[in-house]
Length: 507
Ligand code: ME8
Image (cartoon, rainbow, N blue to C red):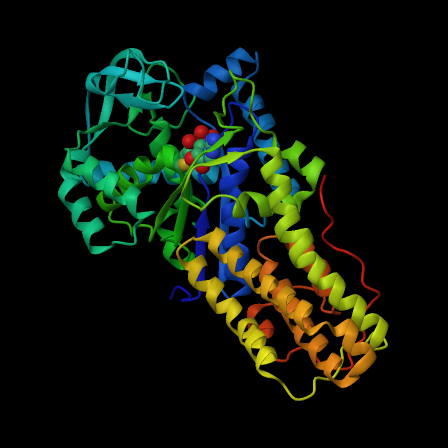
């Protein structure tokens, strides 16, 4: 029986035609934050990422670099793995479509589609964009280019087709019965109107190049790179290279595919249709996030304005980059990167708010309570109000994370810290140190509880900063939510180390 507490989350697998940029880091970061959250919340998480290594685009990039395709993909794929380390991603697996475990499962899925009568041999003539690895109808072209702005070329070749048209009604029924399947809501409507507009059969093999997985029945053909790539989500959770083992492993169907808005259609139309045809379970949800621009401009290599995540981490530190990317833009919307907004966001919310709160509180405890968490006395209304915010924080965050409203989850953390800063200003424990030590002890205890829960809640987003914050309260190692959610978990008398600022101002 699959474990009810399993949670399987995936990133798209990235093309290895070029080095990773901020967009790739962004998608994987969102998945990392969601995966870490679920682990701390008691789930058995499987977080998958990887690289998409076949197809004409990769073959051409290898040629351009005068490299053998396998050597080329080995080299570029490694850069994506390194990015995972640099960004502190906690992926449980990294799949490459050139691995035997994947190729064998793709061949098995293909066979299932042949057996179900969903694939037939025909001839394709039409437009193809190598950059998008996509077929376009004449009517979709804009000024002779793909709607994405990519160049297209005319293609005429023998091709196997998938009977996508056959699945139109079933897909619409599925969207209707599972309103949570496509998110955000506005994107769901786009997909539904696309499918209602009519689906044509999809060309799923190519013959004009060879860098791909051969069609088992006919080695002149390679399997269309999208059918190959999408299968990674299931091939990664099988064993012994055998598709039928996914049930034993228990992670399929995925709980969440996170993708950029550019590839939603492929994930919300083609992928479920392939799975329905193969009689395999469908993923539970596909969430499409927006795109980043740089200082207001579309990010593109030709404009020379790509943002290198490695450089950002070198300049600002990994957790500031993680925080900014997750907080600045409502997850699902487009967003703009600019250095001033980065600096403002970090200074206002981390350094001046959370960082300052913890430094002020802990310095007072260190100085006035012999470095030990003080014993609280009778609680007043203001203390109780703040402590109820502490008790509610993780549940409130959880509601946002369930629907991938990551920016709102962080907003809850910021709000509690702001309330605690107001409280410390009103209570002025530095005055109480001179006039009423008992009351001071209560106030500082309440504040220490706030810092404890902020540290717990920040773990998925800014793991290193959260660990430092918790270490200041003598809490070490992963601090899961069931431990953290116990009111008064901080024991009076706990010795704390000499506090040091953990969130420095930028600029
Ligand atoms: O599409 N802002 O790979 P890919 C935000 N191999 N996200 C961005 C972005 C930007 N400016 N640019 C890219 C592929 N992304 C296929 C996927 S999955 C079975 C196969 C992110 O290397 C976004 O998530 O072109 C987008 O979907 C992904 O990178 C595309 O990566």
